[in-house]
Amino acid sequence: MKRFLKIAALVVVVLVLVVGTLLAVTFMGRRPLTDGQEVGGGLRMIADGFSGIVMIPVGDGDVALIDAGNDQNGEAIKSELSRRQLTPDSVTVILLTHGHPDHIGAIKAFPKAQVMALQTEVPLIEGRAGARGPLPRMFPVSPTGISVTRALTDGEVVTVGNVPIRVYAVPGHTTGSAAYVVNGVVMVGDSADIASDGSLQGAPWLFSDSQSDNRASLVRLEQRLTADGTAVTAIVPSHSGMASGLMPLSEFVRRNE
Image (cartoon, rainbow, N blue to C red; front, side, top):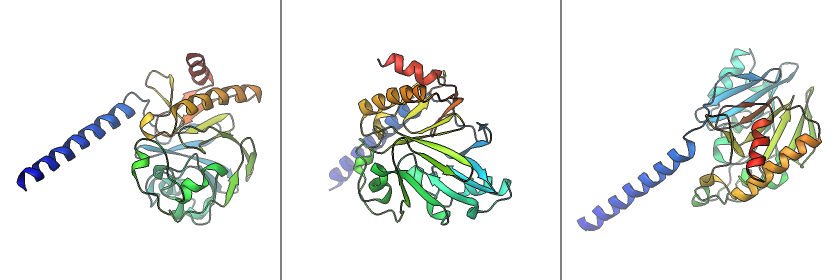
């Protein structure tokens, strides 16, 4: 019995070390998140631990959020609201880049907000389907208690208050991953990161459904932004600092042609 327990303990230790190493490799070398950084005429980055949230003023004292972070109480978001002399009821819309837990955490803390996401991502957000990445697929599927109140379609423009927000489908990290464009700022969620040298990287293998689909989506996104005549001022991922202009994405496309 003692031998069995020792073997079991050794297996656990090895698994922890393996997972820890994989996580370290996944997150090393990224440009760090900068809490409070502003871009695109008032869009502000909120660092919620290792997850980034973007707050967008939409007029009349209201704001929209891109993602809702990891903390279920939404303390980082509430702190920024307080700085603006606003309340949780000022959050009118939460647009989700995808349905992983570290992006939907605080949704229930803002009950008056509409929750929007691509139609194909709704089952994952609501807990009716599981993610297929190597690590996420190990966790059980269970209802999240979150309801998406408006399902979005690829290419549509959602007007929130006085701000138009364009929606792009970028499947790969998850089936229904989305990117949002506001005032030339492209918010890509986990579909890309910015490395410490300023280059753009695709979604991390450990958490992604399909890296090949992710690469194809980023190539297509660059083509569509160019075709739409979008003057890109910044690319903003959720787990790294941002980069200026379209160039990092264009260079990624050239490396993956």
